[in-house]
Amino acid sequence: MPRTLHVREPRPASFWALACVFALFVLFMYGPMLVIFILSFQGPEGGLTFPLRGLSLHWFRQLAEGLGVVDIGAALRRSLALGLAVMACTVAFSVLAGLAFRKRLAGGNLLFFIVVASLIMPSIIVSLGIGLEFRLIDSGVKAVLERLGWQAALEGYGTSLGLFTSALGAHLTWTLPFGLLIMFAVFNRFNPAYEEAARDLGATPWQTFRHVVLPLIAPSVVGIGMFGFTLSWDEIARTSQAIGDVNTLPLELQGLTSTVTTPAIYALGTVTTVVSFAVMGCTIALVWLLGRRKAGAR
Image (cartoon, rainbow, N blue to C red; front, side):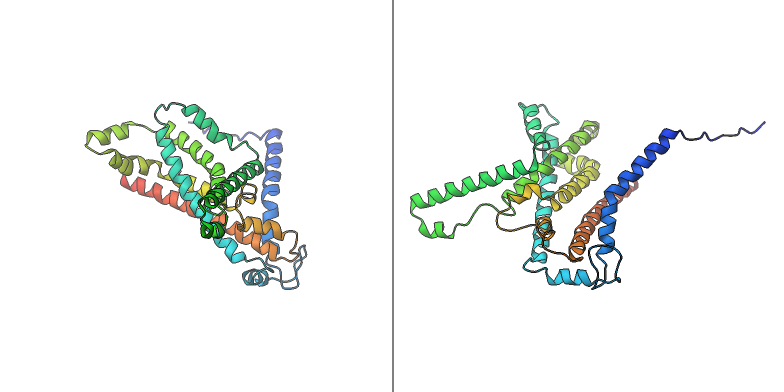
């Protein structure tokens, strides 16, 4: 029987045009990040541009010692704490909302549009509104304390603006819509027959969720957690007017761009980028482990 020869057809010119556009897009997106990464390893005499003047960890050491009056360590801890809090709240609220929206809710469509609307609202407007809201709360609390004559409490009261109050709320207006949309997509293709089988075997609603629903949606829940942390980690606009008297690491980095003229600013950018990639790497590894565990259970 004669052998069939498979002749590979040449790719059309449109393919190479689109490939060039994609390559330029990748270069435009990741090129600056790569340049900053390289320049952060300049020697002690290095500047903000090429050519490199030696290779060292000098600017990372200087970063650890501090940049002027800016406490980078404290800002880093605040950003990590806020990111973890946002991640936990985003996961919990998204899963609960996804479960709730599986049934028809009175006013559910309106509630959904209100939540998703925060994605298209200008971030700085959201931040200004939340900051104004908490300042009005401060005025109300102070007025009540003054009327009650509690002078000691009035003098000791500062502001309700803070990391885990107004800033947390501002970040959740950005992360929750993404988590909710992911949960909608997951439960839209979720087979309820698994839950029915668990109930037929005598499982309680909690046992059904714990042993059936949660393992099936676990990879998506991990992805929501990653979205929650990374979106909070580098958020500036929604934080700027809603955090009060302290700053997160992105706000400190933004402020340092106009005052620091050494590669230490690049070292700080490299640190923040490495944290983001580390979180994404941990997420991918966790999803892979969950997949292996599910395959082993089968």
